[in-house]
Length: 108
Image 1: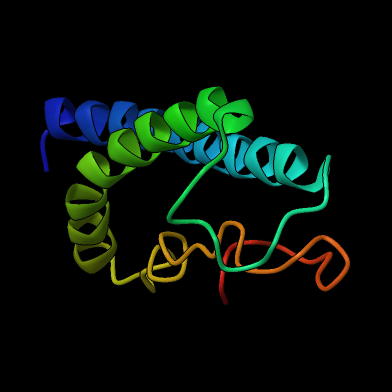
Image 2 (image 1 turned 180 degrees about the vertical axis):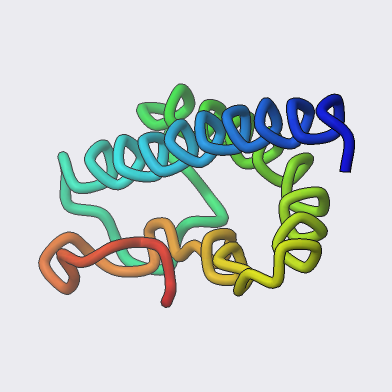
């Protein structure tokens, strides 16, 4: 393995960490906005206008992370690590009313 490849992998892991942090922060902000008002569960296909910014931000962060996941999985295989990204993209935003659920929107 060359130094160039290691540096590239190290830079990638740093970028991946930043993308995961941004994604998780966006999920938290989306859920916080959803919980501000009583909303009916299961209506995540239709978002109210007051959540446009959160929905747009969530979509952008999710796309950014999805672009990195194939290389992240390859690195996991290369270094014989368990792939921790399987559940990360399984998200149930708005599936439960605020009174029904207080745990994470990430399905594990």
